[in-house]
Amino acid sequence: MTQTVLVFLDRALPGGRIEDASKPQLFATDLGATRGDGVFETLLVLDGHVRKLPAHLSRMQHSARVLELDVPGHEAWERAIVTALDEYQRVVGPLTEVVVKLVATRGVEGSGEATCWVAASAPAPAAKRQREEGIDVLLLDRGYDSDLGERAPWLLLGAKTLSYAVNMAALRYAHSHGADDVIFTSSDGQVLEGPTSTVLLAHAEKDDAGRVTLKRLVTPRLDSGILPGTSQGALFAAAKEAGWELGYGPLVPDDLFDADAVWLISSVRLLTPVNHLDGKPIGSDPSLAKALTEELAALFDRIP
Ligand code: PLP
Image 1 (tube, rainbow, N blue to C red):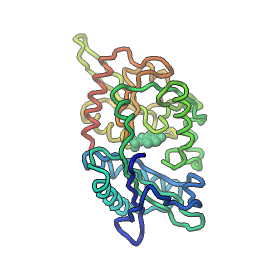
Image 2 (tube, rainbow, N blue to C red; image 1 turned 45 degrees about the vertical axis):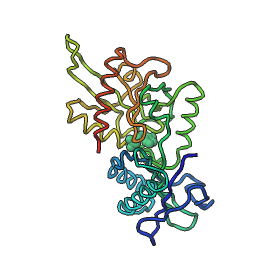
Image 3 (cartoon, rainbow, N blue to C red; image 1 turned 30 degrees about the vertical axis):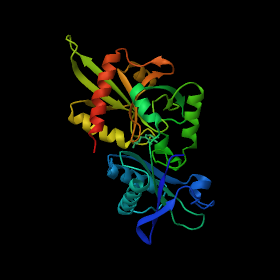
Image 4 (tube, protein in one colour; image 1 turned 180 degrees about the vertical axis):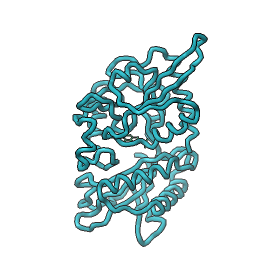
């Protein structure tokens, strides 16, 4: 089992309370456990640096507001993260690559107080291999139309809630059908997101000498009931500076098949190329796809 460092946020202890992750720590009546009622964030620490911390903390506050859940402010989380990383360094090893999860549940039933903790552990080894080799993906219907988020705020679309059982079921379905991951589509045929990632595609134009003259990076509409990715936001900012054109859907599956490259991206997996979608290859020029991946990966590496 991977070793996990656990720090609970605690009003009485500004830096949080270190607990033993191998022992039970939650009440069985915690609404996070019984109803999946809560929010979370997953961050990556590289060489001791917590990447995109302000973006993750802001998104967590946004998710909590959507759930009408009262959670501690940025500083309490920042202090608990410092405690967790100090402890990780002491008991597990160097902070070369660490996954940090922030969780806030609605708390023990009747208490009216959120249960909040930070967990630090090593990343799953599959992520690195998938980044290098690429993945095969299935398109799966999520059953919602792309405007439902606006009409039905109680569905919490676009908030990062603890209710990920459906996302995990979609991944299991893909695995049992020979694929590595999933891209959800809406009932009105739009490309949405992966169960734990944002979809990106790129088009490039070449001149007669084979030089790339235009690079366009596109992601689905952010208001289509998907989670706005902190990686997508940061990568778009970096790509814009590097001269890429940017676009935001609406996208349909044919746009993915017509792209020169498609990726799934997230804070932990970083930039993972999609090789096949529903069994069909993506991109007609593998050397162009590779060049685009290398260029974007280099931009991704520079994101603070
Ligand atoms: N979409 C979903 C549903 C996710 O769960 C995630 C990350 O876990 C993402 C997108 C990517 O978000 P980020 O880039 O902030 O990690």
